[in-house]
Length: 121
Image (cartoon, rainbow, N blue to C red; front, side, top):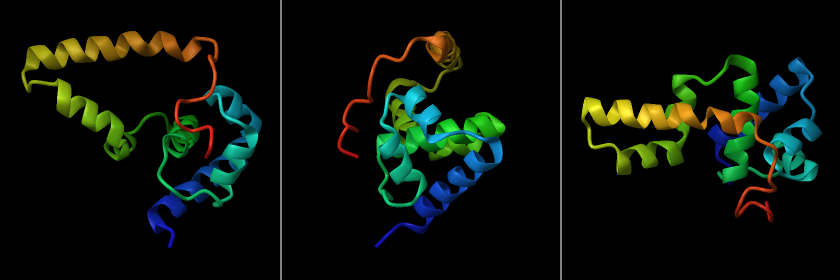
């Protein structure tokens, strides 16, 4: 049985792509995935929560409205990383935010290949 939340997110991402003229090939190239993997996700044929599903949805959602608080809250991997690294102090929050901001250089880095663990989507 499919998860209605996952299905709705995939359909919303597909609609944003149509509205914005984002192609599956563009998404695949940006994420280091195959066009067929992206197609399966956006068409609703691959409705399981996977790293690639999350990456495709985030890529499309960011192109629509940027990164939102809801997108952050829905990203279990990011939240878990924060839970395991942040000690709760203001100083540590500032240090972590500096590290995160420094990762912005990766946005323009050349694509280095497929995401680990998602080749068999």
